[in-house]
Image 1 (spheres, rainbow, N blue to C red):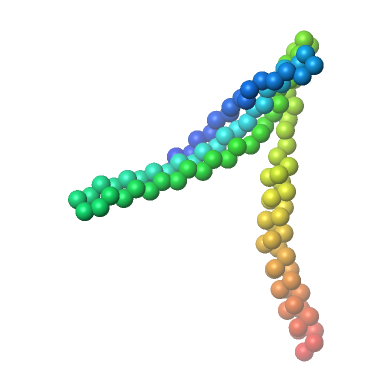
Image 2 (cartoon, rainbow, N blue to C red; image 1 turned 120 degrees about the vertical axis):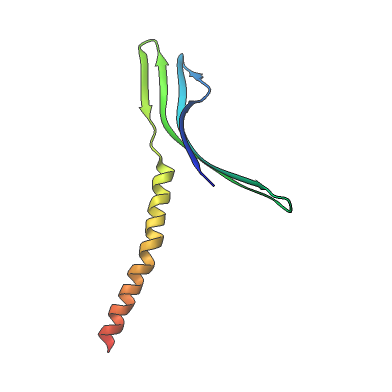
Length: 105
């Protein structure tokens, strides 16, 4: 399988609040891999598609002009922190158990 990775920036549907128009913008990253084989005795098909959507900015249009408000990925940061903790805590506990075990002997 030869995977193909694409990146694109998409804009959502604009909505109006108190005379100002807001338009969300997001970055879409897609990984696609496909494979198909047709043989005399068998047919094999395999494929995968992974899509990651990350909000980037909220565009505000008003009479004064256009402003771009950056959107942070708080969920991604929290998940990254949890993944680091999940990997680090067992290592730290193992090191402490070994250290206290060596102290008793």
